[in-house]
Length: 304
Image 1 (cartoon, one colour):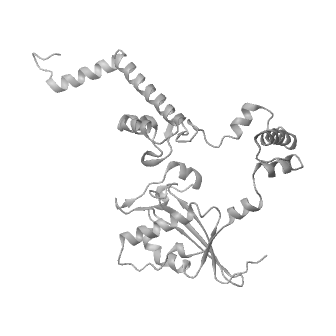
Image 2 (tube, rainbow, N blue to C red):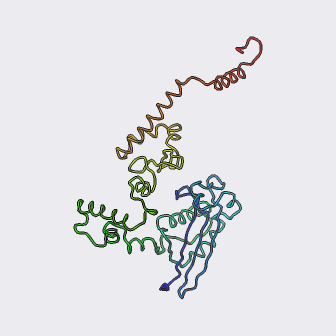
Image 3 (cartoon, rainbow, N blue to C red):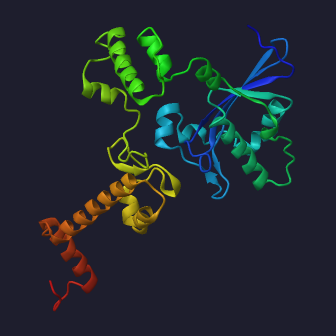
């Protein structure tokens, strides 16, 4: 069915250096503008992500590059966002917006890039305020029309509704019935009747604490998932800012989160003490001797 439009609807999608709207940048921006009557126009930009404060190209986060396949070298000679802002504004003019899960990420990221240009070039006339535009998020329509709640799952896998939804016992029994229905529906090569396999299959991201403040990276190292140290390993933060762990202990966090930070701190401190007690290796002794010799000289009367 063709869209019933009174003004153009601009579908858009963004690829970026990472997921932190405040510190990451757009590297690819695509517009599909649909006009009343069905005409559509398409425009896609590759963008050199620019750090306005440091006046240099912002590097790609390796995790983002693994997803979008775009490297720093590929972007080095592309225009910066402030160099395409006039054309972007022309495409945005007189249009409403649409995207898939765009209201949570793409829209805020696009707004952030526009605000950066406004701040860096106050003399520019940028006649766009995204807050004034209607935003259609297609993912939200999908989720509302095809709910993924327990009642819908029971109907899909078991074949009927169940009574007393949202009563704890009824919900628990319904969940058990749904899992059995899932195992009946899918062949063994797609979903295994094994708790360990099922647990790994349903695990979206390995978290150390239940609140997800500490997650494991690809190397299975515990990392901070929020705030100023987001993406850094807990070990790195402990070594550079040990007071951060005290801030966590005294902050408004769950007791489980505080406990996991405390366990990591105890582990790091124990490792540091063990390292001090460990005898120097032959190579470490040679290295230390070389440093002392270099400092005090190797002539007659020296220590060596």
